[in-house]
Image 1: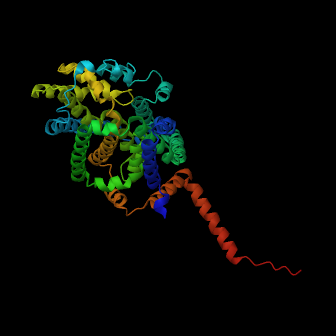
Image 2 (image 1 turned 90 degrees about the vertical axis):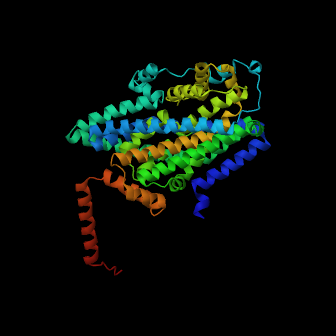
Image 3 (image 1 turned 120 degrees about the vertical axis):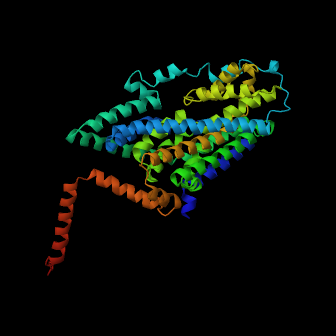
Length: 464
């Protein structure tokens, strides 16, 4: 009976109903978009403050400022390895499965302004601009724009200053940060009760707006993307098991509610707070979680990398062009740069593909418009692969830094520690943090005295 009350079951049912509504009543399905959009906005409004307090608390409690730098460098190293493997895998899949062969598209018939309409005229930031954009105009602006890397920079500076402080100032501020963190997680818990409604609206809109006919038109491309992602996830799971002993299938089961919600809403950001909490419960140090996960959302887009390299070769095949080995190496080089910092840029996938097509100069940039219909059906692959890539990166970096409780990880992922036990443990931890030690001793003494007085008190008999 508890399974039917679980968030996972509710989201699965909502997604199935949403797909049915989108197929049977497509126009009504399109009208349900605000349900999904509203839910995503509710979660996103808390991401910036959550990242700030998590990172500040993590750095302040770690105390070792050199460790913070090592965590960042090791995370970037892992991100670069993972995304490069993903890009290469996409190229190999395109060469092997040839999803665009035989389409014989005439590039002259495509609308050259279609991509500009989709992206709203936005551009991917250049390297220098990207680095400079990490520095916020003001502290308030970083939170107002929900710019994760800017918030992360502020949190690192604030956490470093707090770690260098001593005495009552450090303890008081750290207690305040911990309390704010708990309040944010409590608010997220309230919002998550609306998750099935958000997943229903988002999936109904997607199916209603784009229809099942797109699946038939771009069947081979979609199959190639999902097969590539599956191969990548197998490699990722083997690497995680070899380095950390983590079972990826067990982790998927442990986070199944969050995964279904991310797939239903086509957004990995909506589950970032819950994933950060679950990674911490699974034995990853909070400082590692706070630094690796937000950074990975900008630098470790494994699913997007697979799609971008595969889609570029698909476009060339669709217009009858066979790319040389040097041209494919050019694709890798361009995408290794343009795939970084895509998060938060409208139509970022199309911008990256357009930049790659322009650098390759093998087919007109207007050909990228071919993907306007199929792109939405890649969201499930991209979201799930990006999510798993960032979670595995957190476990790996935590292991490299000696900040992974392996025994706890295995107990949590295997189900030896239930969700109820984890929640009870978290509640006990919160109580310990909120209640000073001397107060707890005093409370215990009062309780003992009251108990003793109850035992030895002479009963009063009413004779009336």
